[in-house]
Length: 290
Image (tube, rainbow, N blue to C red; front, top):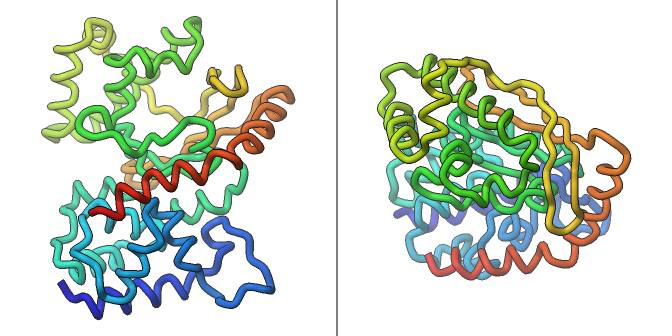
């Protein structure tokens, strides 16, 4: 681990990013043109003290999970992300692992969307990043591990995943999710990750097994869905899906479909201002121990 070089790289990348690039307010009274350490800590979900120790070369070796969070917070390119891993004494993730890190360009688009909820998702349905409005709307969807990382797996094996959608829309959602996975399986024929996920779903869910046998194929691009928020009630959202040229990642953007939903989203943002920092504090305490 190259502590001094790691410290210098992190400090310089932090100072090179303007707050507006990551969706934060820029003020003429700021004493630095880049991000503050507290802002990096907030964006990465770790303690300010740990960010300070990293930049001073006094930290223990950061985990790969923590490095991924820093790479997202600092909007690192693929080359910069690989360099970060090397400086910290880790091998950069292999190609399939890199695909699980949201691309820098998509991260910048997340920031530019402001108050519009949006997430970056892999083609298999793993949420790689989400902006603050999406976090308030859906909760943290990036913390799952194993097969639970994938929306399709949670949808067919965990009743709680369905609870966020009204029963009358769930059959349509079933077919849409399975048809999208069928399209991915066709593009990635022979990929053991995809084949293994499908085999486990067929073994664990009779509904998935039945729908998979129907061989419907459809790539999601535009859809309307209803979300049931425990805090503000029913939200009718239009979802636009922007897909990268290699179809490996997607940017999902959620906009209110009616005035009532728009008002409830405004209320959710107001309610979230009081509770959001506490969530970051809890995660910061966990990451600070890595």
